[in-house]
Length: 52
Image (cartoon, rainbow, N blue to C red; front, side, top):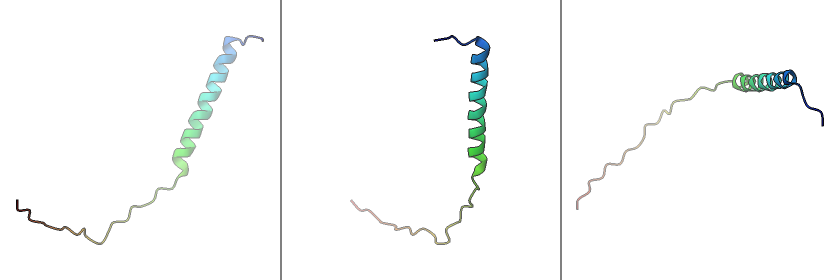
């Protein structure tokens, strides 16, 4: 099996790193952010008096 020159390893590393970074950047920017709607109904609070 022939050995790769160090320059070829560097090119391969740069290629994989750049494709990985492009993949991450595209995944980050491809989503459209959705707005969170506020709940109009207030939460119902039940007050209980505990007597021991």
